[in-house]
Image (cartoon, rainbow, N blue to C red; front, top):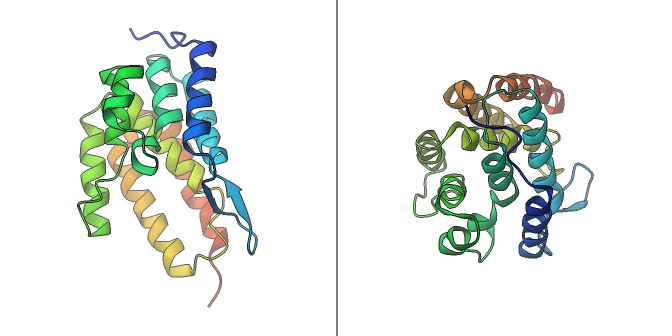
Length: 190
């Protein structure tokens, strides 16, 4: 049985500081016109979802899940490399973070998502949990500049993600299903 209490607050603090430095200056569009939110807010939202999932999941490697949650966008969105993640956190964490990173060589958006999901499914279920937590966090509110077509496409992608990864964590699968349904409130009547 994996121990869900096998994580260190000191390691989390050090990992968080690293992620804060790596994502420094990155922002994303908030829900209000012209609003920009610090990217570390998104990282925190994913970590919070994972921490709550740990409380609801008996057989979970919390250390792996938390580290992957904090670092999930570092290879994709910063200069931090797979080798650097491996050196600091080990191969298991690095493999998880790499699986959570989109392959930019693939140009087609739907093919890119399928590739990502296939690579995630080859990882421990803690990595599946991080991907579901990531999408849950992204479904709180759309950026102010998204139109209905973008919102609908994002919901469809979220359903695919849920169908593919739901067996990885029942609690997060339930949360994701709820968030997809609730996201409909952001669709504007035409």
